[in-house]
Amino acid sequence: MMTVSKSLLAFALLAAPVAVLADPAAPASTNDEAKKADGDRMICRTQSETGSRLSRKRVCMTANEWREHSFRQGQAHERKTAELPKAGS
Image (cartoon, rainbow, N blue to C red):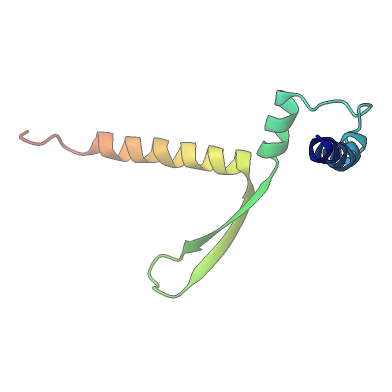
Protein backbone atom coordinates (compact mmCIF):
# COMPACT_ATOMS: atom_id res chain seq x y z
CA MET A 1 0.00 0.00 0.00
CA MET A 2 2.88 2.31 0.75
CA THR A 3 4.37 1.94 -2.75
CA VAL A 4 1.03 2.78 -4.35
CA SER A 5 0.72 6.00 -2.36
CA LYS A 6 4.33 6.92 -3.19
CA SER A 7 3.63 6.29 -6.87
CA LEU A 8 0.52 8.48 -6.76
CA LEU A 9 2.45 11.24 -4.99
CA ALA A 10 5.24 11.07 -7.59
CA PHE A 11 2.70 11.23 -10.41
CA ALA A 12 0.96 14.22 -8.84
CA LEU A 13 4.26 16.07 -8.46
CA LEU A 14 5.22 15.37 -12.07
CA ALA A 15 1.80 16.28 -13.49
CA ALA A 16 1.44 19.56 -11.55
CA PRO A 17 3.92 21.59 -13.65
CA VAL A 18 2.15 20.57 -16.85
CA ALA A 19 -1.13 21.99 -15.55
CA VAL A 20 0.62 25.25 -14.64
CA LEU A 21 2.12 25.59 -18.14
CA ALA A 22 -1.31 25.52 -19.80
CA ASP A 23 -2.48 29.15 -19.93
CA PRO A 24 -6.26 29.19 -19.39
CA ALA A 25 -6.41 32.92 -20.25
CA ALA A 26 -5.08 32.32 -23.77
CA PRO A 27 -7.94 31.83 -26.25
CA ALA A 28 -7.96 28.61 -28.19
CA SER A 29 -7.27 29.20 -31.87
CA THR A 30 -10.22 28.50 -34.10
CA ASN A 31 -10.10 26.22 -37.08
CA ASP A 32 -10.28 29.21 -39.47
CA GLU A 33 -7.24 30.82 -37.85
CA ALA A 34 -5.29 27.57 -38.17
CA LYS A 35 -6.20 27.28 -41.86
CA LYS A 36 -5.20 30.91 -42.47
CA ALA A 37 -1.89 30.42 -40.70
CA ASP A 38 -1.28 27.25 -42.72
CA GLY A 39 -2.06 29.10 -45.96
CA ASP A 40 0.49 31.81 -45.12
CA ARG A 41 3.24 29.28 -44.44
CA MET A 42 6.19 29.65 -46.84
CA ILE A 43 7.14 26.56 -48.83
CA CYS A 44 10.30 26.40 -50.94
CA ARG A 45 10.74 23.84 -53.70
CA THR A 46 13.65 23.09 -55.98
CA GLN A 47 12.70 22.88 -59.64
CA SER A 48 14.79 21.59 -62.52
CA GLU A 49 15.60 24.02 -65.31
CA THR A 50 14.38 22.93 -68.73
CA GLY A 51 17.25 21.85 -70.99
CA SER A 52 19.74 21.14 -68.23
CA ARG A 53 20.40 18.13 -66.06
CA LEU A 54 22.29 20.06 -63.40
CA SER A 55 20.73 23.52 -63.23
CA ARG A 56 18.09 23.90 -60.56
CA LYS A 57 16.07 26.86 -59.34
CA ARG A 58 14.61 27.36 -55.87
CA VAL A 59 11.07 28.77 -55.86
CA CYS A 60 9.41 29.98 -52.64
CA MET A 61 5.69 30.72 -52.32
CA THR A 62 3.04 30.52 -49.62
CA ALA A 63 0.89 27.41 -49.37
CA ASN A 64 -2.03 29.32 -50.90
CA GLU A 65 0.13 30.44 -53.83
CA TRP A 66 1.34 26.86 -54.43
CA ARG A 67 -2.28 25.65 -54.37
CA GLU A 68 -3.26 28.29 -56.95
CA HIS A 69 -0.19 27.47 -59.07
CA SER A 70 -1.07 23.76 -59.10
CA PHE A 71 -4.68 24.56 -60.01
CA ARG A 72 -3.58 26.73 -62.95
CA GLN A 73 -1.13 24.06 -64.14
CA GLY A 74 -3.94 21.49 -64.10
CA GLN A 75 -6.18 23.82 -66.12
CA ALA A 76 -3.45 24.36 -68.70
CA HIS A 77 -2.91 20.60 -68.97
CA GLU A 78 -6.64 20.00 -69.49
CA ARG A 79 -6.78 22.65 -72.24
CA LYS A 80 -3.79 21.14 -74.05
CA THR A 81 -5.15 17.58 -73.88
CA ALA A 82 -8.60 18.74 -75.04
CA GLU A 83 -7.00 20.17 -78.19
CA LEU A 84 -5.40 16.84 -79.15
CA PRO A 85 -7.14 14.85 -81.88
CA LYS A 86 -9.15 11.89 -80.65
CA ALA A 87 -7.77 8.40 -81.32
CA GLY A 88 -9.38 6.76 -84.32
CA SER A 89 -10.59 10.03 -85.87
